[in-house]
Length: 478
Image 1 (tube, helix red, strand yellow):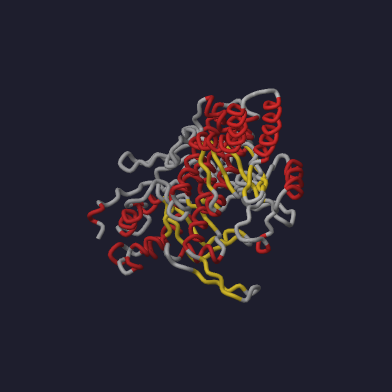
Image 2 (cartoon, helix red, strand yellow; image 1 turned 90 degrees about the vertical axis):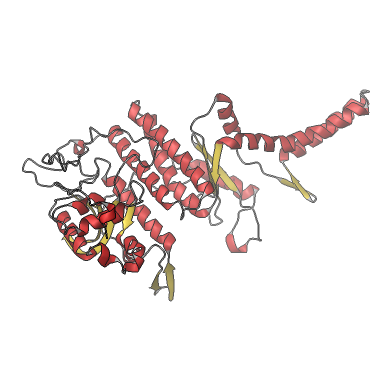
């Protein structure tokens, strides 16, 4: 089973403002344009505060800025996620915190809430009437001074108390990443509205936990330093989305034999990932369990749950299995390096180097190993990587192991072939200048590969092959 780049439309859509109710966005945008300052970019004064439109959801809220040209914003200005475990009082506090942001009006050198100005005016009127009716100044003046102070500062105290149960991110890179996860979770929530299946409700719970934990992680670390955890979490969310879509809208392709006919030939790939194939039972000494769809439970809260495998990503000479379809990069389970048809002991030594100290589910490009081996100077001590990757590619083409076959664009492929700290420069003829792509762009490529892998593994994990060898002792890898 060679899994090629799967379509992801309908699963990982970009989250846009008020997707189900576009008329609400138009009303709120029109009100914002007439009632506040719309930031227009370079023409604005330094430090200007853009008008934000808040979209509330059951899991939190999203603040969108209002582009001056009337278009939809491409990404949120701020994303907040509620804790998935709350008491009744905490839920009330979170509802208060998710209210529409209060606008402030300028009164001389200071700005106050509109409610404060209204309460101040009403308090002065009430204080005047109270004095006219004979109430002493010692009571009227403190009460008149206390009321506006409470209205101005009490909401801040309530916000701080409720804010202990919410995580908020505003950094551009963090919002861009969390926007994708929020889109996936929104799809889970929408699917749960029309289904009473426990699996769907459980998927929503797991998705909310992942969204909250990811937001908490992005509050403490940037996307670059937390890239491994982020890739694992996004893969889990994609698996939840694919599995939920199958439960809610089952198709004929969900049958266990939909990808193979009675003669065992591979059927064309449809809108869902290939199902697990029936493999001959391996020997007890080298048994590699093949997880079927029926044996796969819904993923739990830990991002490492969906897989116990590490993956090797390597580029190779392009080939064309179909017209206008280029395959130039492949991904396999690390255990495929132990296949008897792979050059040994080179494959086993590379396996030990690849899996040593890695997190479960991590995607490791071959160039990362080269970087760790002193820029490739120590490859002869480990093995012939060129011969091993050639054998792996042959295994994929012969369908003796599963692989994710990708046709990466030139820049993405160059980043995968470069080390984790390298840069790639490309000439842009339209702008007549060079553009530099660095480690952050490389991480984005790996995130995208992780999404494709999660889509492909929704039915079962990649099959590493039969008759795998026992890995050598790490101490023997010289």
